[in-house]
Image (cartoon, rainbow, N blue to C red):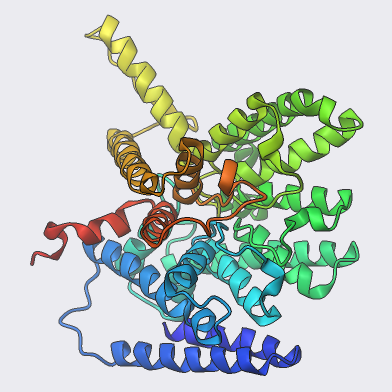
Length: 467
């Protein structure tokens, strides 16, 4: 929370630069309130300092809720988003890099508010507590449980012996890729403010834009390609980039998850381009729009260059399936993750084989190695809980009396941290019409999806709080 208070000073400076004194004061007041609460917690005596798996889950879950609660104060205080539930939804969507919005006119917000709204993408993309571990050194096992509770994917591996060094390497790669993207956008003629907003949204795979038309506002093939490519790059496991830095190219390119990830993207781009070819003047334009939309959906970013809700049924179906698959483990993307999907498919195939050959012994392999049964069971548990949360959320959201497509894709978009869905919540729509209850349910889904379900879900379990 102290870190968040410091980060709030940046948009207050942006407000002063653009002459938005009222918004700047709102950020300073929010920063003071957040810092005061953080200082109170920091100086409150603790009974112990050991952090095990349970403590790691609880710390991560509560921290993200508090960060979202205090992070929405500038919107409420400035009256830019007057309703607390709406402001909380928008902030949760920012930190969890979802990109779903209740705003009907994005341009109506002050530039400082637009900056903070997108900056939360960049902060939440790699993980707030991962960033905190770089600043505040913790013991190896203490930081290990925090990193694993916050990192996306079936497993979280250390790149180097010390977890703090691992966190530093991850953020170093994150910053380098962000700076390269910023340079390319500026080189293409995009204004500095717009470039920063789009870097935050692309790097965090979030999707908030400072224009209601999103990336379509620029109508530039150059920006479509650059942002599309970098969305895919940020959807790759960051361990791959570390291997490239070590010049272990064969090991990096030999990643099975990376091959499947790129293969799925290639298949989706080509087949959708063929399917939508008649809607555009040339096959080249069809490929351009297909590539961008596939990139933004599989990486769960949420940008848009066209209203893909108007595409043929096949293309829309493929995009919905990509919403579930998501990006690679260890990336800033959401969804089930490619590695988890592959493990689940191979575990199911093994189960079917065992029905016919009950005495056979077959191991599930992934990435050239035998997958431990513990990992397979964890994936099975994850999928079960994932389906239960999705079903319960759809039932609760259906109280709005909207169509099934609206309710279903709204939950899928939030639980997988994508942003837009189909129908009312498509690229040209928003979540403003949902009730306060539905917005809180969808906020829970966004937090659960970003934190791999359990850090948020375990907060509601009585066994978590037993001594």
